Amino acid sequence: RFFETEPSVKKVFPKIVKINDSNELELDMDMEVLSRHASNVMHSLGAAVESLDHSEFFNGIVENIGRSHGQRKIKPKMLELLWPSLNYGLKQVLRDTYTKEVAAAWKKVYFYLCKHMRQGIQEYHAQDKQAIK
Image (tube, rainbow, N blue to C red):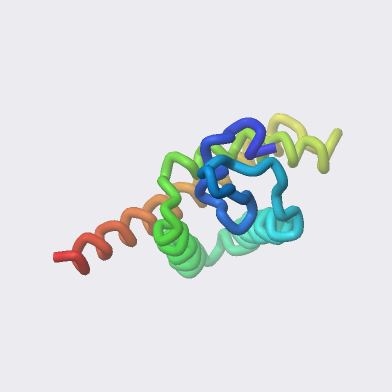
């Protein structure tokens, strides 16, 4: 769903989306890799909920994930683009239990993660600039 609603982000997922010799995006995707990545994202969200009592520890982990995304040329704004697709997926899975309150809680957790991932991405870029000097 994310690649359908945000086709411009396909180019930053080279292991999932293929680019041909003409530098055009191929229509086929590696569904196994995509599924693994989606599963990792969902486990991270679950871990966020479970680790709310240990926020410093968890924030450090999320910031490290942000740094690794910075290495992969992910821009902080791209993180926020994922929310509508994630929200859609949660609605599909949770159905009637996905109330306004549950949706608001998931959104709060997701944007909390985005805040700390953004911090990690920015730290990566700051370190990268220092290494160039």
